[in-house]
Image (cartoon, one colour):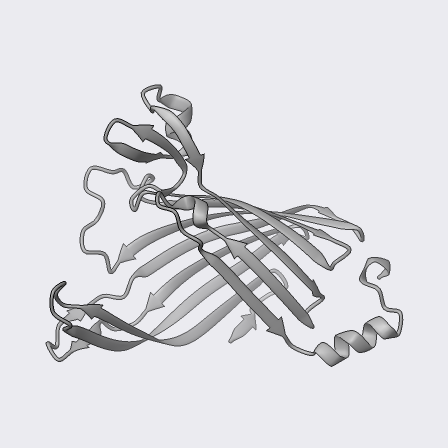
Length: 237
């Protein structure tokens, strides 16, 4: 549910059910299952026509209760802060630059001892270019130093180690660069009628993996096809 408070400020609330299953032991097939309700709350502020700023608090709700042990645990509560800047907004090309910060504030077994608050924040920067309002290309950078994902991955004597952008600039004892945590995506669609997206974040991990995400959004395919047949091409609107 979304509510427009003013011409520049809106709030949204989403309700969901979280279900989790985990193995109690490695050797025996014993499992614990738990279910809990949760809510996400978000604010969106648009001070200028090409700049938007958003904040969200995810997974607000009671502790999840597992059975049959009746153990409880907090949901992984997240605080997100993001923005969107549109330096190019034309008929042929539209370009969005989207930074995002995410902080886990509850639901972790132990906070990152020895790390500063800033290093514990997940950082992301995405760029999306859309041509003719039909085809989109996305490129993103992601770093999560707490869980050793993304960032700049260097080969060290004891294995791989992930560094943030600030460490890369300031430190010299990093080792040999192996790869960078780059994500990418591709999408094709027409307005809000239908869209198909493909994306991958395999490069943020140390091990070989094929992490693919496929999504299909179809609101009114017939209406979109009808508009195209009537000559409503998006780059002329």
